[in-house]
Image 1 (tube, rainbow, N blue to C red):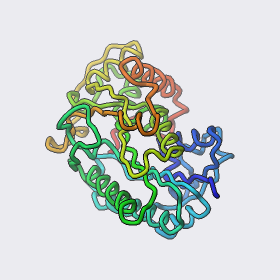
Image 2: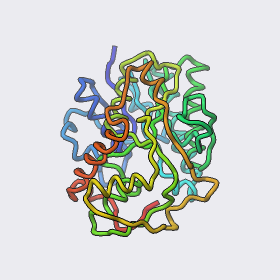
Image 3: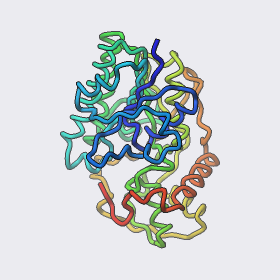
Image 4: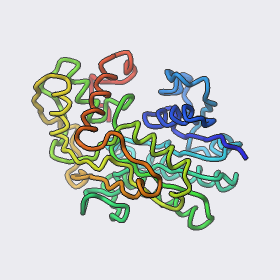
Length: 331
């Protein structure tokens, strides 16, 4: 029996944290990272455990490459995806290729190779604006952006392989994950880096929407729990903190942690088209608690503040994020 775990998207924000946690928990890890001519492995380049990871490069859109990367692995954590809602307005087909087509390549290879367990990554964006809160897994799906529509398609392709072919599959649905290594395009790092750069008048998008922010170590631990449990097979589960906060209130928490007072002006480039804006997200995590024994360590208002403090500390060292753009908004 092969216990090696393939992690797709392992060079990214969440994927790198997941790969490191698996190694530190005693798992043998193969990391599939996006091929590029510079030879970069993303965040794994600076990981303390990179020498303990079998890193392979490729492209999730290539079925042959995915099959080759998966050979010899007993389980798969599929995190590779094209993210970022604003860019999905410009290039929707690329989201279809990567998120739906890439997921099809993963589940087909897993079926062919008789992989014991696939954990597929969804997103809270598939729910659209909450019709009731907290959001349970029975909430209707609504694609309010090409990105969210592509993830709905990816979820359905993945589940169809469980229903049609008996593929052992778990779907995890993280809500808004934040923490060290997140792109400065995302709202929390955008606030932190603007303040640390000396600005006291921040340029942001809409402040009224609410989110359930989940600290990255909690998201990573949910993947570990799903991997090590059979309780989630055939199920989709929210991964959230069960705490709702508006973007405007989040800004004030960050400013308070950083010891400054700030104002906010609207950056039109950061606004979504009004019908596309997801106004409210708040997760029920009861199902993941019950089936996986998982629970967030950064839940509630106190946990959120601790997560913000850790994130601010990481971004306070410019060398940690020197490869990220903070001087302009990148879609």
